[in-house]
Length: 282
Ligand SMILES: Nc1ncnc2c1ncn2[C@@H]1O[C@H](COP(=O)(O)OP(=O)(O)OP(=O)(O)O)[C@@H](O)[C@H]1O
Ligand SMILES: [Mg+2]
Image (cartoon, rainbow, N blue to C red):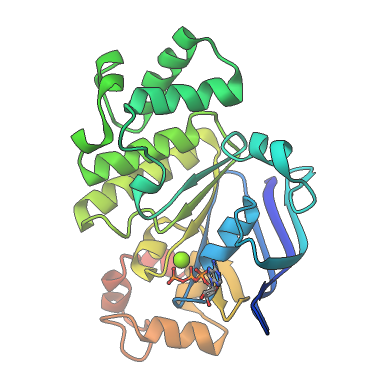
């Protein structure tokens, strides 16, 4: 298996007027091709900042150290147009709110084709062709006419699928998904998770999947990293993390799940977070 993303000893401090606040305290994390690496942990632990720093969108007042490798490219040392060329092309991003990625006043076709033409230098006709293909891959059918529609003409779940289509249009190696299903209702959420899983299995995509929801985590992630106070305190296969957590913080996180009083002991506990029994024994 090949490592698509490797974060080594990433630290980030926020410089204030009279103090410096440590936010990331030496994060280590790797994401392999064809797998979903989950990143979980309590609110404020630094999950989103980790994802944003990988794509060079950390707060302007941040001071960072450490290395972030995307294949053979070290991302922390590059800036400007070289970074722009990588962001969106080799790394796709999806956030909780699809309107972060979708402009309300532009048709979805023009957003997709602008993106494709900027990164891949396609002709207008080629870009439209590829835009329709990208949409159909995420389950937005309708061919060319669908390109003329505006974001508000789609449901929330469809908008998130469109955001995923844009993120994946240039066939990136890595998708960073930060709470991509948190704003969706449960059935729509399941559809988007199944879509991401299918893209990972079909395209060999590597996904860094950030969520505070361990139920969602257990249904999508191959491996899980648990973050607390700016550090990854534990990392392992999904079944190992859910079935045999080593760190006391992971224990308390799992024990706080509904239906899992005192930890994930029984078949019912596992079912409550969507983990099947046979997976938990591996
Ligand atoms: N732009 C910013 N300027 C200053 N501090 C920030 C900024 N963005 C985030 N922080 C701080 O960094 C820490 C980590 O925030 P982050 O958004 O990464 O948390 P998170 O783990 O994603 O939480 P949640 O589950 O609520 O999304 C928090 O203490 C937050 O207040
Ligand atoms: Mg966050």
